[in-house]
Image: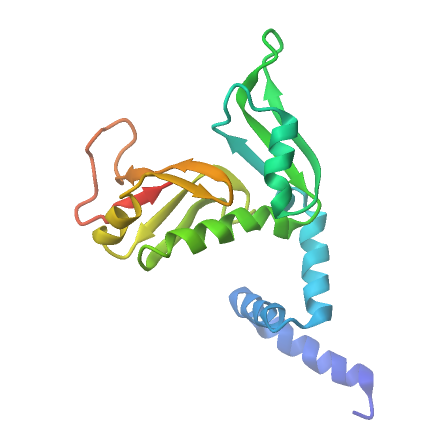
Length: 194
């Protein structure tokens, strides 16, 4: 290490030769080990992207207010903005709203808590689906594909769930063409929907 610039250039060439998936794996491993500099850098970069911190919420009752949404979601982290969209004529909720968290990890905690709850019924094959894979934004629903049909049935013994004070109604989702009831892919495992 007599020449620090030469040392850095050597590692730069190594890093540039790695594929994107491998680099993601390396960064994720460093974050999971809790390496402070890496964790801080990843969080700072994610926090700059507004779409990583914003959630769309749907299925709200007509009596839901911005204050009640703020109260409900404050358990997941600080937020910059929360708004329930209201009908101008009636002043009642239109059934949806938005939350922008101060940090991206606040927007991801609904996902982590859902996965922890639904994996208690049986091993999850995939999920939660309902988050945009590129942006991580919540789409207003979540789907879990269990490894077996029995796991999906177990999760729906009681379709009404209360997770961290949030009331969810769950049902079976069958893969198929939109608008074609009963159409399904042969051998598809039912998915528990939230």
